View (cartoon, rainbow, N blue to C red):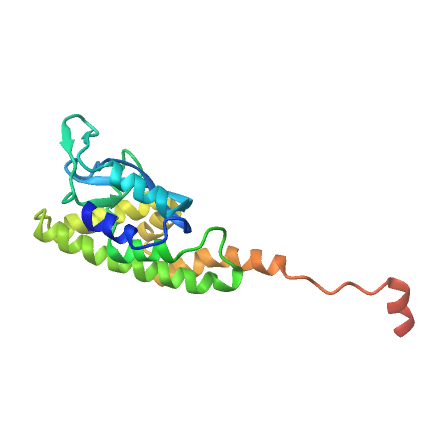
Length: 203
């Protein structure tokens, strides 16, 4: 979505709402200096995000390797740390997910649903990226695949490493989920052991 659409979406929400996932720090996107990017942040307010978006209108930013780039309401928006090309657009789906999130860690019972939602949103963002990269930027399928794999590698080197070793998506998800399941099991209260003398008496 462009900057004007982003501002409109944020203006429709209570500015005092606190969200778990948000953005800040507008800057020139390294993937395309003419575009605008925001850095991902946690535990922020809609007001702070709206201020960040509004502050970029009519402002000239310097590209990563030089050059001046003026941002306006039509500037395309990305979610990316400064100096990186994340390939993650600030799509309507991503913004809606941000606005629906609540500040603070998600309860353990909601983790599975949270992972499924993030996966679905990631797929939608990938679809948007594929469309833009092909029709707007003229990239080939191979170039698009390389860009997406590089983004995954930067986001989680372990995932990237397992993918390069030939493991599939579902295999990686299961492999990386086992430690989390063990941690959750460790947090489950265990029944107290019976005193030794009591156990001997029952025997």
